[in-house]
Length: 237
Image 1 (cartoon, rainbow, N blue to C red):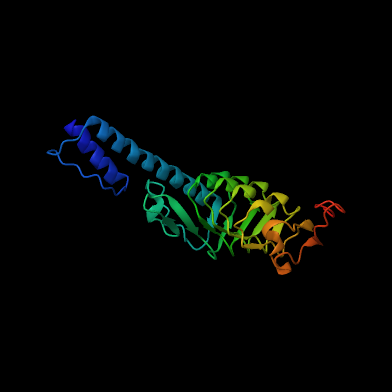
Image 2 (image 1 turned 90 degrees about the vertical axis):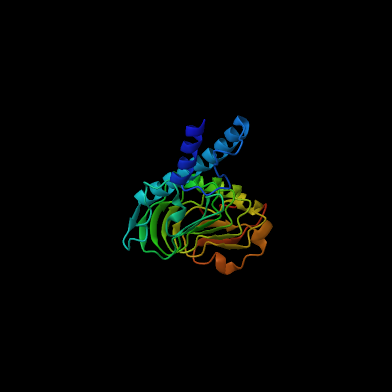
């Protein structure tokens, strides 16, 4: 038991986990208490490892002309020491700041593994391809800034799952299709900008969409506000 506790203490240090758990061979520790403590920190380590794997997969898809991702070392289990990555007190990744970083490439489904992410800042780069549907699983997301890239395809309907989303800026890309009507259910949405794309159809008028300025929709192929009962929302697509 003594040797196993020593191993556990060393394991926490290797994983880079700071905790209130301090091992003393003279302190009594029941097997149940130890087991619960071990499982708790093991779950943190596995979660952090999953997020590190997701970020490493993202890096492999990106072209990093300015080496802004050089600190993203895949041999480290804990990504919280990487530049442009912010974690909470439990070592969960909550923020990714890569705006205006001169990166190109594409996003993949792995980004959906960052379950605790609150801020995704990828604006003013040269990222192309489709926006992954898996972003719709990041239910803690407050802000998503993908503007000023070369994203194409449709706005994912899965974004309707992002109930905490407050800022969604997709302007200045190459997005097509209509604005998903499912997004009118995002009651916390305060800023929505899809200007300067190639969107078609009509502009939703329900929910928060009734408060967004027309500048948020300009320079598309949109046919103005939705006329319910007169034309379909995707009229003109």
